[in-house]
Image 1 (spheres, rainbow, N blue to C red):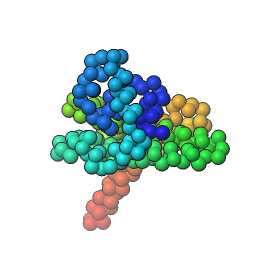
Image 2: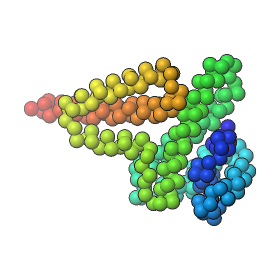
Image 3: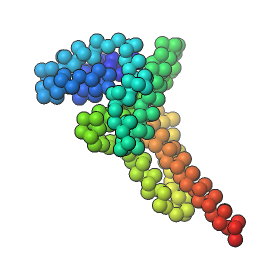
Image 4: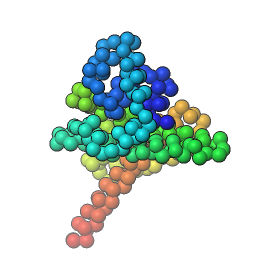
Length: 229
């Protein structure tokens, strides 16, 4: 099931439809009509997007050339670094969505179907969050800033200025956060929160990797200074 098929199944909301239109079948004239009067013109949006077959959607999402054409700001020298990071994440998320959707047909038990469905929802959620950032920046020329990557980048900048003791404390607290999130995910008591918890876990794991690197850099630099005395 593609993003468009999921959108149609979930009620075909106008806001999400405009994001999909911008990504897969840009039509500024139609977009303006829907923005001005969603109730009157949403059926045209549905018609435009539902006319795309699965092969067309997949090709549009994965082909690098089309991707850059849809989001030309990614090639501009002043493009925010967060968006460039998200560009790679978006392709990865979409490929993961397509892969897991194919795996769904090979499931033989309810447990397998459940696990694959969770991954499909996770990849879909990741892709949609990035799409929101791209569509907003393309239209307004400024960041929406709701994706977790922005908070991650802020934390990384703060960590660069930390001393070794602060970094050690940060490392321990981050490890504790990762352990708690992993425990919550293992419990599986809140399927509705699983996607957001996975996002937080990935963010914390990336943060821990950055902390480890900063500590190693500090220790390497300190070791060189002391060995030269």
